[in-house]
Image 1 (cartoon, rainbow, N blue to C red):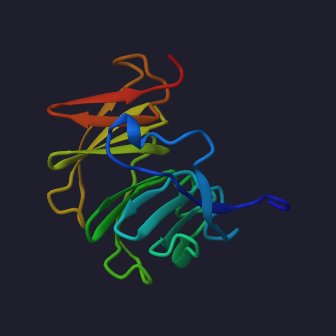
Image 2: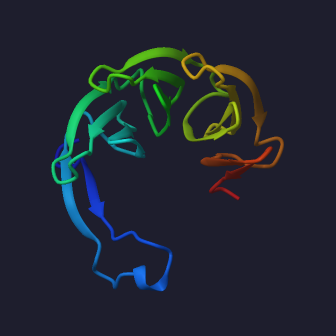
Length: 196
């Protein structure tokens, strides 16, 4: 899209102990680095860190892997870009050597070499698996919030080969038309839905 600024911003905030002395006054947050790349960061939607690597999915059909070891000069290491294959890439979940990418499908991606990520598996299943906007790990399962109205459950004992276990129709059971995110705790999950 012409004229659109696409960037990854790195901000530095003073973090310290949870004591009142560690609270800094307003204005202490500062910009330390910016990365622009209209192809790799097209419509960036989320960011997750694992070590010094930032994983940034984009709704333009992309996934950027960015080295943030030097925050003042973030470096694009690689990107998977395909507006059809990775359409609506909205969320990521790093799991060691494997990264799960939520888009209109679920992808397991080998990120051992961040300069050469490799798709290991793609799971499709529309309409139940579509528009994945949030993921959470709970034990050996990943839960997905699918804006198409479903909650997905995947067995990730082998993250390189996730297996679909079940779906919950959140529209029929709970009145959630468009689940947007999910969090896991114990044997329960919490689902956020903007419509109700």
